[in-house]
Image (cartoon, rainbow, N blue to C red):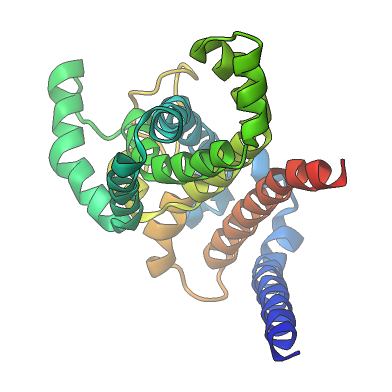
Length: 283
């Protein structure tokens, strides 16, 4: 009985904290939306001293950074999971898992410092840029940071596949590549999709590392696909400006509104990520 009570208490505490956080952000950003409406969400100019608060450059920057990260981290993480679970002998898997755990445990500020010391100079020298600060740098750094999440959850997805599927594939005469494409990946895909969405949520919330390498310039890339230009993300904007914003000012309320938008995006991704598991359990 006491265990059930602790579980219920933990669940209720989690729900209460979520309601508290969202409620606080909503209350803090309400003056901004009451004064400016929702049009700043698609506005392109952010000049607090001129009362211009356009969210769009930061939203575009966040989308580009996480897209680059997923394009790199998803295939790499999936390949690492397949190799470690399906190919490597059991005695080597613990070594791989240790490396993944070390990557996951490195603080984001350390990733940011490595980005400044290694990634930015490399981009400057190899791509002939005036500065390495760019959306590409932010995406590359984020790809390393979300890689452990994708790899770990994908490993669990392959481990959860019933061995009966593998035996049936062997009985049908499928080689390993055919088993992977026709049997293993379809069975693991719902969990892999969830892993990608959860990693996306984590990447959207990264602040310090992204802030150190993205350049923090509020403008939409021109042309829109130019990933070598300095830009801004929602988190880098909040991280840079929150210290200089007076509590209760329009700028402070606008930053809280940015936090609310980001929180809602992450919440939607988390809900979608859980949907396949619920359906699978229902089926």
